[in-house]
Length: 149
Image 1 (cartoon, helix red, strand yellow):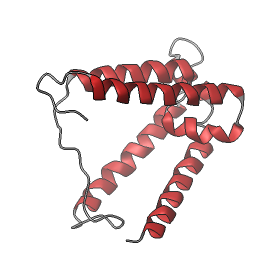
Image 2: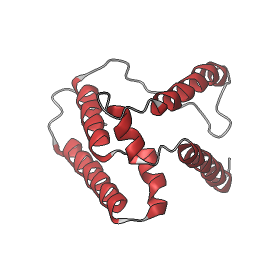
Image 3: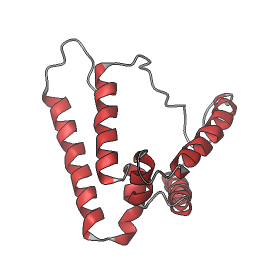
């Protein structure tokens, strides 16, 4: 597949994803914070969005994996690690804390850049700093027999 076709496919997929987040109101941090506030103004709508995504994924993934290769790539890029380790647990916890504090996970955060207000710019800046700090840390730490990623 040519580079141009891949860019167009990525643009279409990202647009569809962003549109879905907007329609579901997941770019509003109050929706996320209210979902997490089970003792106050609890809003279960995020659970329905997640369940809808999970249902589509449960149906589509087996059908997709029956193919010899993806439509837009030369081969499937599937995870090779299958065990849950300290790094995945710690990463999930840090992600969840950040999500709860900011009200954004990465997809809605990037979609919300269209508002370009100081709050979202601060959240995106913190996300970028955290991402680069983590990459730097992982590149400069002793591996103790574990492979680097």
